[in-house]
Image (cartoon, rainbow, N blue to C red):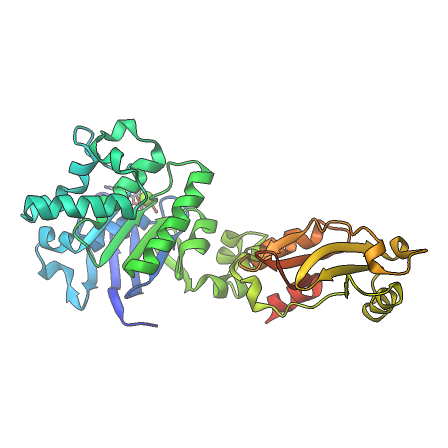
Length: 367
Ligand code: ADP
Ligand code: MG
């Protein structure tokens, strides 16, 4: 694990008047430059943990370090300059334009006007907002656009750390999925240390380099990269939280490029019917794919060849299940189970790369 950017040591928070702690002796290290997701049922203490990191609330006991320094040794307003904070309710100032919202922290830091304007333009572009939106007020933007503005605002002073509390909770699933992908693209460029809170395990698996599964009372049940969680859940709670379709979820993490594609039963369009038959015999299939150079024209049933002498005399059927090489094994599985051939064709652009069958998918799962 990379060096810790944020370190919690035996952190406990008992709210005034509460019998049980909201977070009970939690120890956790968040590596620099990674996205760590805190996931768990409502009320398990996720928001409490984030707010202790940026000192919106103070722990009852324990130590939190940011970049090697005890956070209580840093003035809260100084601390928060280095920590962007994005919340579900977005919290944009309703009576300020998007540009002024994004400019809030640089303004507090006393940046000059030109530098602020330049930074606002840069961020509007970075988060994928239309430049024209910068002069609008939050209420005239969609939920997804407001969320982007919230991310832009949190990034304004280029803090090394971002805390995101259910940031995509308020948008519909399609927009949500797009925002998740954009966050990952952004992170590729920015390499921030991000603590991302969600109650949605699918979101956790998708965005996290590492996922901390929490139980009520901030009890850490398991802390591991998504693939490891899915492969070896530490206990019943984790397994239950991951759900019955754990194997399928794992497939969505494995790139198709990690399996050995097979050439499949293939014959060139210039071949003879005898060649096609011999390929089918060798491969044990009742169908054969037809290639022209590295382009796949389609496939033929063995009966399509009856009475023909060359492959070129037959009209190939179109492969319905084609996937691009960049897809996941999960997408490959969907494609494979939905076809009669029980095979999916893998393409890069229109270039034929090979095929996947169920065998390759289960090998990929076992490896
Ligand atoms: P999560 O974000 O995981 O849903 P929270 O951190 O908001 O959980 O809350 C954890 C527990 O602490 C819950 O039982 C909640 O009711 C309680 N809690 C949260 N904030 C306060 C507060 N300001 N005062 C008292 N109890 C609180
Ligand atoms: Mg919460």
